Image 1 (cartoon, rainbow over the protein chains, first blue to last red):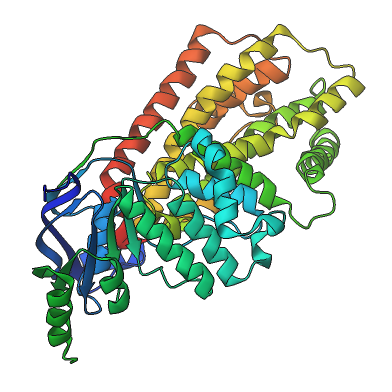
Image 2 (tube, helix red, strand yellow):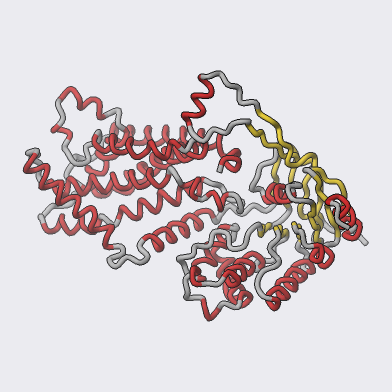
Length: 250
Length: 260
């Protein structure tokens, strides 16, 4: 089998925060501590160290690891939200990130305005949203409720609209953070179908999750993170075993 | 680090700013009975009070004083609302900035845009009062778009700077209000420049807002047509403000996420 085209690659990515022993909430504290000559001894915290991954077209890569292992940080760096200290990231194509469903929705507005607002925040143009508008409404099954302000929606309806917006555009790359378990079973089944559809159309997918069932269901390969380091990259079976031994669960 | 994107879609940012402005305007008067009318009634009310106070108590004697006040308030409201809301534009949108890849300046522009649109509602009472008092519009009105553009650039620079600083030191948000008060009374919004003693008038030149006020008054009140010197002053202040604002913003933007 030929190697698929790489749609997203990260090379030697490192993220570190400097955590001061004190935090300056205000200018007063900042000046006072300087006047007193107190040193704000900074501790370097390595959220990610030297991580490299490639995501091929039509491939789904699972990111797993314990809480605080750096999964979400890596996803944010891939999405271009967080700036890494070192490394290089190449994005070949349109990318959508699903770090939270319904980002940018305004609860006072109706579904229509929110679709335009949410999709526009994800970087899609008016013309593109026009073209996918009906598809989004139908997928979310909210046509009957499109004139209601979002504050009257149930949380499931809200999530459905968010998922529909993010996956409508056949992105080349889709980044997903733990949001697949939304809505009722029927909607979940349609979400799963949609993810598989995107995969078969050639979208490269990165899935951050604690749900090993989802990993087995969708992922072609798995990356295991441990304290910011990539400790395993390979098949889902072995990755899951590795992850479980790391967190001490059999 | 390097972040390389092969297919960049930058063209939609203006559309996004427009959508954000529309959202602001739609949400603003939800649940209020008079809705947008408030944006027109407020300057009218202010004008009435100020006309009574200044022309009777302070003996200001200007022709068409209500128009003088309305034109000043129009510009001032653009400025004060932009600053008041703009200073928080990054902090208020922290939830979004943490979850979508979007340049943060967009939120500052949208906030200023919506403050400007909002202040423009005051054109309605302006026109009504102008017609009622028999004020004759001059060709100076044609200067208005360019004056407003330069004013916008000036405000954008200021907001970029204070909104960035506010991310690192939340004090900035608190100090803005008293400073606005001082600038309000230090600017000829309600009183004519001639009401100031001769020796203080020179100081007005150091107040950037006063230069734009002259521009607005030249367009909306019977001030003389702007000279090359007037235009240069406005252009220079706008350019400087935008330069300083962008510089501060560019230095801070990559660290926002750690402070928001």
